[in-house]
Structure formats: structure tokens, C-alpha cells
Length: 352
Ligand code: ASP
Image (cartoon, rainbow, N blue to C red; front, top):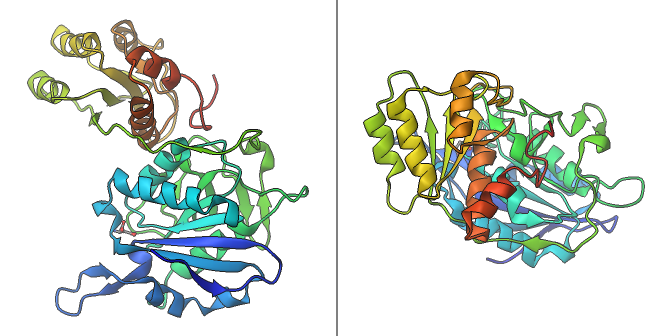
């Protein structure tokens, strides 16, 4: 992978634009009519306006670019390694990525970078850049502006992994994809947006993570032996048992009802207790689009708590999965993993 200079800098600021794929760079296959990923030259050709920006932009294309539904955590690692390699050479980073799994990648990256001092802004589009009504051009230009922005002290205006979509600047581990077909595809249901974006970009500095005082550390070891299971009435304990007994399983994110409730019957609870006894870390997040887990509120939640299930507070399922992968990759001792699941590491849950 080689870096290409797309536009030179006239103000000394430089942004690295990493293209991984997604709808933004897709073209319709004339035979199947399905959308297929194209190379970055196709994207650049349709956003000539980037040459008018005062800061410099270099580009890096992942080969082959992919539909993000095909992406695994190896893509997160690749992005993390590239950003780390070029961290000192750029003021900020923009990652073009498919929308389908963007919230997972953003969550993963947020944990993988400790003491991040620069912006990593993920964006993409719902309509390919070559289409007249594309949302890709505006998303890309705004993401670049955000990545190049400085605060009054000359530091990066944003020192977080974020998703920029439809003028919403969202902390990456708070984002979730809420629409398969609207331009307003991402929301942050439990935390403020990090900027008001209109004619001006007004950053909500009070809502952002503090600037780090230690150098960046990148963690690329992830343990993917985790399961995300959404409960529903009638889910059979035998099916749950089979899932919970999958070889190598180390962590489970349980998407429960309401404020963290699950069936309290003995058959279900036995499966949960046995998993906890096998050192599997179980984290409770709500399947409600908004709100938090409060396991002491109902008896059905208390039963989970007494079985050793951890609260995921108001974390998104994406953030809980990514945090588990990160902690299980970092730590062998499941007691330590459990401890850090309850520590707010990157602003992924609200303190209660
Ligand atoms: N399937 C596409 C992807 O995630 C959807 C998109 O980019 O909007 O790569």
C-alpha cells in the first residue's frame, strides 16, 4: 500500500484519507444491477472540490477495497496499524468505510487506541459518490474539515474515533446504524453529538474526552471468541445452551429486555450460571434503542445480577462486543476482564 498525495497543503495541516471500501465508492454492475466496490480513483474523480481545501490530503487505498459486511476484525487491525505508522506525520485521519459495520469498526478502534491525541473520523455514504443525489460528497468534505480542525490552543479539535454522517459527529463507540435507507443513518442514542454542524462546525468540547498526557499506545490483539445474543420470548434454553457451550467461547453480550431483564426461570438461569462458572464473561445490554441497564430495578434483572452477569450500562451492543474483544485480547484473567468491563475506558458508557 502506497500513499499518494492528492492535494498539497497550503496551511501546514495534513490529513491522511484511508479508503477501505463501502457504498461511497461503489458502481452498479450492469448485468446483476448489484453495487460493487471500485477503487479510490473513482471516488476522487467525483469529489474534485477537495483540491479547494486549504490543508493537504494524502490517500491510502486498502487492496482490495471491500463491502464492510465482508470485513472482520482484521480490517480494524489494518486500519489501526496504518494510523499508528503515520500517526506523527498527519494532523488527522479520515477512514472511508461501508456503513453496514461502521459502528463496530469505530467501536473497535476506539478501544484499540489508548491516549489518542488526534481525530480518526469514519465516514461513507448511503448513495454511491457517482450518483447525482449522493450523500458521499458532503460526508467526505465535512469529515475532512473535522479531521483538520484545531482548537483555540492549536491542538486537534477532536481527539477521538468518531463517525461523521449526515452532519452528525458521533463518538465512535456510541454510534449505531439506525437506518438502511435514510441519509440520517447513524445515531448516538445515549450521548450528545460532539459538534453542531451547520454553516459553521461548533465542537462540543465539554462532551469530548480530555486530551491525553501520555503517548499513544495501539492494541491490536483482539479475542473474537465472543457471542452477541438477542433474547426473545420463546428462545429455547437448548439453543442458548448450545451457543453458550461453543468451543473457545470467552465472552457473551446478552441483549436483554427493557432495563436489563431476562427470563428468570430455572432452565435459563442454570445455563447462565454454568457459563459464568466456566469463566465466561457475560455482559448485559438492553435491546431498547435508547436507555440503560439497571439490573436492580426488577426481580428478573436481579436474578441475572446474582448469577454473575455484568451490567453494560448504556453501552451499545457494538461497543460491548468490541470492548469484550479488546479486553479478552489484552487480559488472560477473566476477573480482570470483568473489572475493566465496569470501567469507563473511552467514554463508552455514561457514569451513573
Ligand atoms: N454494504 C455497504 C457496506 O457496508 C453499505 C454501505 O456502505 O452503505 O460496505
